[in-house]
Image (cartoon, rainbow, N blue to C red; front, side):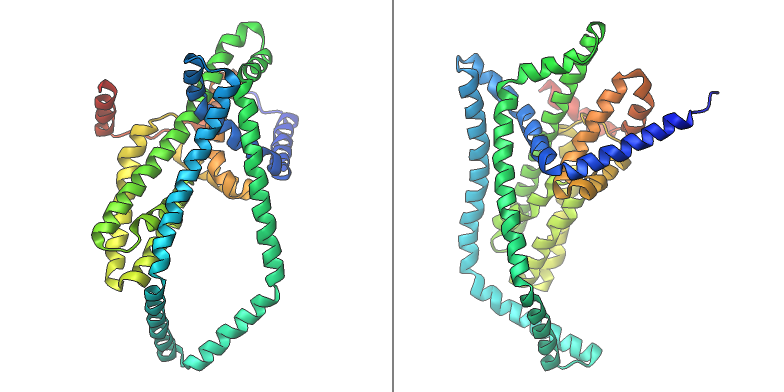
Length: 361
């Protein structure tokens, strides 16, 4: 067995370090481009359908972007309508919150001997210290909002050009390889487009199911503003694994404040039941094994994404790792890496039967 050259190992390590540095310092450029690439692959079938109806490429691309923006506007409208209803219940929620704070003060006094006045003094001191840096926080929030708006504009612009001239970018990719390898390169490109579109569709279908399940369950439970609470709880689930835990916090707090302590446990049961059904039935059916990533590398992708790109990285790095797996499985020297990234967990037999039923349907 030949030993690995120290120079080759050093070159691989140096390449990895430089890649991470480039991704970190170039995140302002790469994050909008990454989202635009995913969304372009998702909307390309719609654009092709419109073109088959006789609509020009440019107009079809603009219509796809309009559909995407209308989808976002619809979500914002639903949230705004629910916020109006939520604002009507604010006096009652405030009264309930004051009762909970009074109970908490009594518990702290009993446990630690701090009187309510001492607790109020402590809180005021903390608020005063925070207010001294209010300008700094305001500037940070303002710059973050402006950055978000500019990033959204970039995503829309990138989407337009990636969809409008998609054949050119595909041809460029094929020209990077020798003519005899172009059929396999074309297969790689097709697989990447399919995985990206399937990932977004599957994630959106999963979020839609959770929103409906949460809304019905919390409404039956009697929780006020169940639709708004469900939407806010579902939005973080676009981040795999971690998002479910983050999203569960808000319904539990609302159940405690606007409902009663006895509603917390049923609310928790609804959240857990929805996640169990989603993870074991919905996601395997709508996403299948398209990403085909090992669970441990899915978690690694989320952690690395957060370290390098923050929250956008937690969303983008999972399909990015899937792209690396696809390329590795089609390049002879990278086969071991493709094998390492590949999912080794098989779906239960009953899930395969369900897939067969849906496929026949």
